[in-house]
Image (cartoon, rainbow, N blue to C red; front, side, top):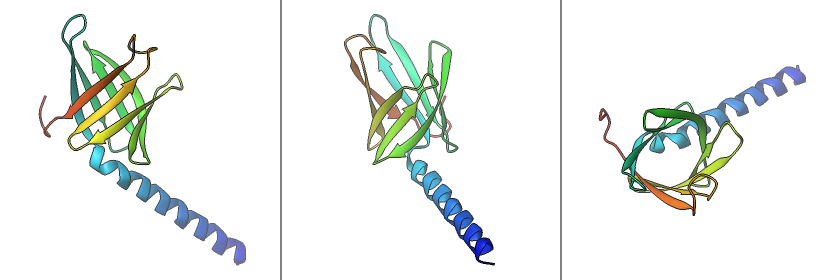
Length: 118
């Protein structure tokens, strides 16, 4: 009887943790756009989905990743094992990229798109 109660308690705690984890993503779910102008003008579309999946699209090439919220920041986990950390400010999301991704390093400013756009 005690083992059964322990298992039920563990399952309840996992469900609560899962619910809280999903809830913390809610305010950030959506589509964001950044414009870059070097050497030519390009737009980057960033999509954050409620299930923790996301995509980064530039010049019709799409890269998928998973994402989570940690300490008020958005962590994008790449398939190669890297992490890109974003800082949300109002309807904007600032991503700091290292020199490995963007030579010389770059801070990209993504603006949240209204629902249904694009």
